[in-house]
Length: 491
Image (cartoon, rainbow, N blue to C red; front, side):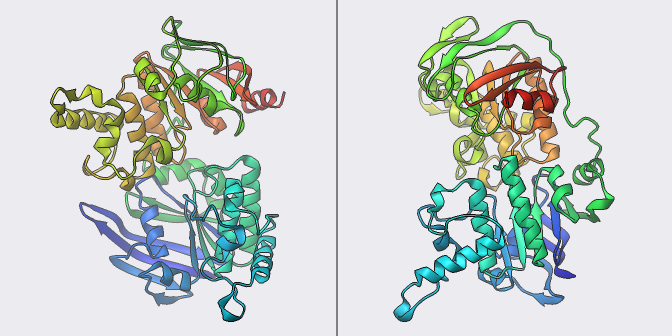
């Protein structure tokens, strides 16, 4: 049964039409995937459904009845709950307090009934098949458990339509399985799920139907059983991507970076080498020490022993500034927390780490700064109507490209890319891989950390496998596969 129907929804912002006659359906007991490249209009559509934006044109129907959604309160009153990618929880409050915030059961004189609050929260969590203590502080929970708290909150609102925006973005495989169990339970309860993800494999596992948007327009709705991944990508990008992972072999012999028995509180006896024009992939499970290794090379974490040798000279960066000045750039796995300043413009973010390149005795050369930022916008194909736009208003893929541009503006010899395509659509991923190939041709060395096994296998020249802060083994491109990587992780 059709619970939700959005018909011919349009929305414009100054200088851009974000949505142009877009439609979407939500079906009782089913998950509808909402897919599209970054900038396709998914977030705008969801914000209209959630009451954060008002539509300019079009109609919204719940149970075939036309409704108007002007506020978040309207959306919730119609049984809609949106679980955003950035979870909206109060970290210092308990699970129960978060689930029923502002709607706590009361005894006489307005006193909160804590026993009922705990009991009602436990019942909701049990319906999801998860074991979380209602009295636990949210700050002590894993990302996966926080997701479950958000879903429990949606159930407490008696939501019939639940929107999940990139719910597995920071989850391990085991945590994803638990989330899928919860989604299947919600479907059994007759909920309509709108599921947004860049991980196409998930769509075929958890969704019954898929709706695709492209450039703010409705492309189509298909049953998942009648479409394959290649056809889905074609719908999303409007063209064939014959090679999902374009690869070139620079075949350089010159060693650019070398680590000899490097240790600190995070990593143990790390030895590795990186050649010019090479992508060195680092694989491992969450918590393996991959990011900590990257930050040790970059200077964010000091080494306690061992040697780091760059271009034949021993270095000892004691800060990120020293790392940058030595020619090592780090692209953070969390662009919104560590990579970008969201309230600043695109231009200011790109040039932030390299103002010395546009500085004069009289201050910043604004004209030169703009020219340099424009060069990187074109080089990276960052889609924005103006460099003065706040970076928070760009799509995830364009934010990521701006984060990479910021790292490249320092003209590094070594570029460390930590989860470079996390939260990025298939078209933007391809552009990032092509950029990495161009950097290889320029003779730069790239260390790439990725939790996506196909990406590690498809892009890397060599692969190091880490577990518990140690390197468990090295694999050549030709010898590496999922089984050989997992065998090293579990050895």
